Image (tube, rainbow, N blue to C red):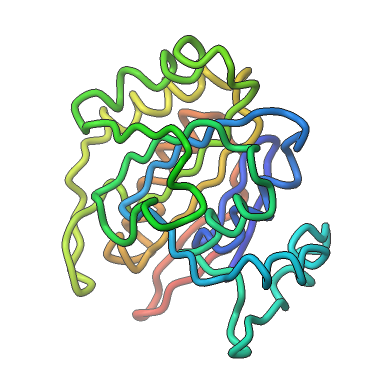
Length: 234
């Protein structure tokens, strides 16, 4: 993690490693939740066993973020990562997630074979995503108490091997923000990952982030600047 910032319901980070910890700061675990995941990748690696989750439950639900980050797996590697946090969260809180929307590029492992495979899911098409989020979150699932929205800016880019280019227009991104903003009473937390390595650099990622923070009225104190081939946040 390079940075993690919170403003109200919104958390902004450089990758989704911190997402599940952020969710736990805002949700009520006695309620029924839906997860709306907008990300190039599914982020559904299930490499942490049920036994590991049970043995380390107190660390995984700890309010101290640095304590959460310090947790190691059985190979002494970072336990919670940017690609396994959703499955780990669901194992920690079974039956909390009742509905999941996966708006992805279908990159990576999907829900089959994970703890989430029996949860109701829908995978929105690109053509319907920017006009239906408010309907899905506020009208379509009356049995869901509140929602978690999880966004990775790499969703708006395509390409491989560091040569990524934006293929989603700003108008489309603004439409998504409008849908989310209109749904905020039903949303407890929004986590936004910048993922510069999948956006062809920090500059491109921050260009999209500025659109999102403006549209959603998020106070973002950091600015990006590139100087002599080095990237700076200040």
